[in-house]
Length: 294
Image (tube, rainbow, N blue to C red; front, top):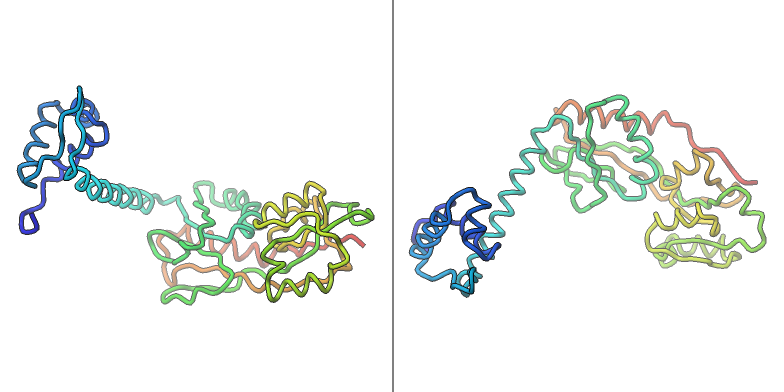
């Protein structure tokens, strides 16, 4: 078989449908052809591979060992083709802009500004992903990336977007209560940098809850469960609308700069550059949140 020509794609489509559905008739209905056509395609495929691929079972069929081996390869290949077609469809849509962003920044800073983007560009359909493993900038998968570190990729234009800090926040009035405790992230407690900061400045507060997801931490703060140590970008929207307030007397810890990136030179679509420029403009013009608890 290694030196033989590849089977007809039509034969492989019929084989995959029959294997998945366990019945030639159902495969024929799905493919809008006759049952005899499916039988003929599979017979020709079996002749070409030199192995029986199905055996009769009741009113249907089941795969032989050779059939199972072939199905594994065919299914993976068809899935890759479908994914490729979907990517082409996405790429050709002039209104889709794919943006990858860390979950805390996406939830607290980006999401509240999406409506402003849509007002400026009514046709825009943003694809917002928090899958940071897919942040490689290219012309197929990612148009814009917001990252904690510069990507330093060839052919990528990147600039600082925001400055983040670890801040202490709680709902108005909670800080005055004697029984108020501390909410924090497990990763912060064990961090070589953040851990000593917490122990130095917040050791007097009893820990009431520890989370492994910053969004759950923010939710707990909004539910009045305690004083939370959170990213200022994650808490940005809640601070702006007054749901949370800073503890003015509490120190802050720098969490570094957040960067925004796109392809250098002309973008895939003018809309990509427009969205990039708008996000950069938001970061430069939105006034810092100044609400405090004394």
